Length: 314
Image: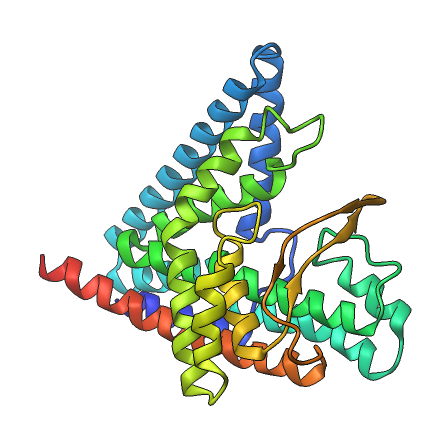
């Protein structure tokens, strides 16, 4: 249990290290290599190629981390705890979500809309070149809200169940969805299973994140009643079965409207809206979203400790 606590604290204090040997980047390179292999041998069955890539990557990632950690504990118990803590730290992104959003806000404060648009383009998939100030801030809120689940609660949830190896398995699942889950010509078939299986792995964490957000809205003296109302009303207003859960709860807590139409690669894509347009999205809403993020993260940590206690007792 101490490794989860240390990993969680390391993330809050240090945040995500930006370096080329980050484990998640290594997983991404592994995904590309195995993708090329299965595309060659299964040219006429791209869905099967995608599934085989998914199975291969999660097996390699889980087994490597499992035996690495087992070896570390065999050498020395303290060494094992330290390594497990660092591994869990690499899987959580609480501070990184806040920092990446504030990089955009920094340009907004300086009234540098062009700079804000460019910085935003690094963290969202939508076209940013024509977004105004409020649309940029709304995108920041949406990004933080949506990623509370797969960047924080999901890795903590799986760390609670199976420690660092299972947390890394989840990150491999999520990485493959990010890399292959596009509905374009290249990945429509190949990415089918990686996207669907990511939905399965995020099913419980996304719903936990939604409810945690309502609780934190109450703690922070935000509109928790509206958060619960909008969560129940709009939690399915997304093409993904999971993404709208945290977004809806955050939108309700802030009294803002998220989602809606956006341009992607020059094409207008209509999407359902989430929440009611009661207030404008401004800098204060971004700060409130970050406070929700940290509150939800703490609840996620408590959840993880409870899971570990139950499993240890059983």
